[in-house]
Image 1 (cartoon, rainbow, N blue to C red):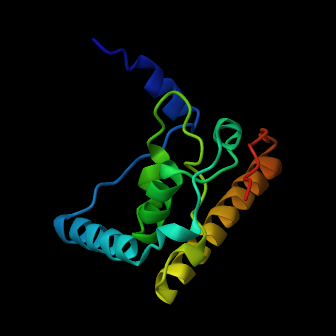
Image 2 (cartoon, rainbow, N blue to C red):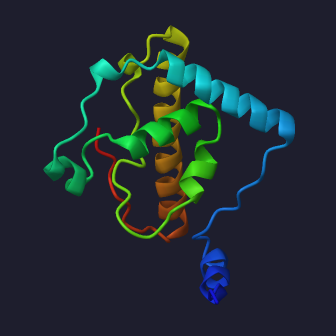
Amino acid sequence: MADFSGHAARRDQGRTMTVNGLNGVQEAAAINTKAAALASYQNDTVAYPDWLKTLSGTGVNSNSGAYTLASIAGVGNQFNAFRPPGNASGSNMFLPGSAFSSRVFQLQVHVAALQQQISVIQKQRAEAETGNAVSTPQMIR
């Protein structure tokens, strides 16, 4: 039987995120957006990283692809809330916008990356203002 007692403590410390489910229409829209982005993806522009980049978390991979599609579909927060144990390198990195033939998806990738950076800066600012600053891993692009 799984022990979920630690979750309540992490939630009290603000270390968990509530994931609000999508209604049927929102879920269908997210799936259709992901499918359209995937159809626009040009695989010949992105190479899978070598083993050293994978271990160091500096290369995009399938986790990056899932994160990029989730962000384009507007469900990047839900993706970020799911953190399985173990190595999830690339799961906070975006595929390059140039990997998509659609200009709309290229722009959405850039906007999502900027939103991610703003979120990190806002969190760091809030922590600094409240005196609860903690070290956060730097994003590598």
